[in-house]
Image 1 (cartoon, helix red, strand yellow):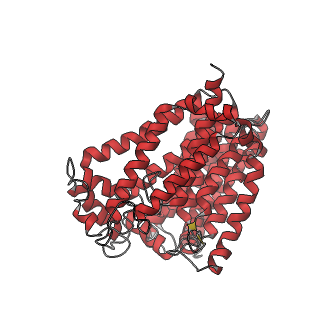
Image 2 (spheres, rainbow, N blue to C red):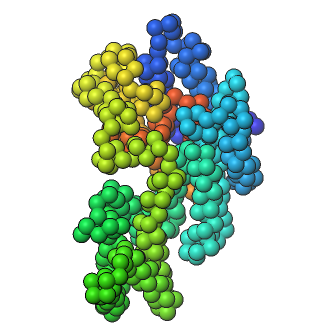
Image 3 (tube, one colour):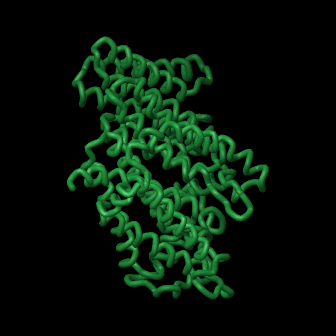
Length: 491
């Protein structure tokens, strides 16, 4: 036990300092954003700042407990702790409904009366351990489909369970494990194709109400998306394999598809839909590439085919998912972010007020507790998801820049720690932590300044929230503890 506590002296000091600064600065801004006329001090435990102080103290105690654990225990208990966490996620919704119902439309909170906890925040920690364990197992490599499915299943399962709790924002965080998979051997082509699939989905949604050539049931966004998929497929074939014959086959199939559509629609007078012709062409070309991947033993053909098929199917499922998976308030936020609707008094209110607060801060800000937008409570949830606009209003552009710099410093130190690990489990775990924090940072700041839809993602260590504070502390404390294993051998 004593030797484990001695690991504290080998801890990565820059990361520890940045963590403490962000926690302290966040606490100050939570007080400023949430203080009321009747609150007399920082430490009033019925206030948000007082509650956060308790959570900070609890987090530090948990960090100490983590430092008392031997390093090999984290790997040994990764799977053992993962499955009970999945069970807890599975029962969270019925428990939430039994103990008081939803919290702002979400069933991801368990109300114990004196305290409310969000298991989805703790799940990030246990899922990170499990994915790191899986990808660090002996002879594991991201080459076969079986290994991909095994790794992806570990974070897709909690993602699905959390979506069922109507906590879509938190569920999306689990996509950040793609960064870990990329570091451990997933081709960069997969990342690019995934990004293109997302862009196409946004394109389909944005132009879903505009019809192509006035043809009913043929949205412009869907036609353009299907054509882009086809063009990207051809470009990848040429770039990676310079296979003109395959390009010629697919282009010829496209010409024949257009001719067939014209014959059925114009000459024969059938009311056929152009969308199904193009989708069928894309699916057929994808199947052709899968056959080519086996005939020529080229895995690249397989991934291009996966992109073509998945992108084609996803373009059709965007509308269904938007209408049936997302809640009405989430739909409105996305439509406002994409410029599809203008709702300054509804879904767009938070972002508009947030941008006003950020702009009014100027270069050096209005001073601590002097922000008018903050003090007059114009921005809802300003102590949680919109805490960054409090920073910008009261501390100005320079203060916001310092906070952004601290996060870049935090992520840089995690990257440094990750790359100096001798054990694969520690490196995989570090990249899992890096992905989660990077995702939170980009989405939160993006939605506060109006570049992203408002999906309820807190700013790590700064936003109010006990479950979030505990979860991020557990992630970082375990990272620091695993890193000391390298340092201890130097003494």
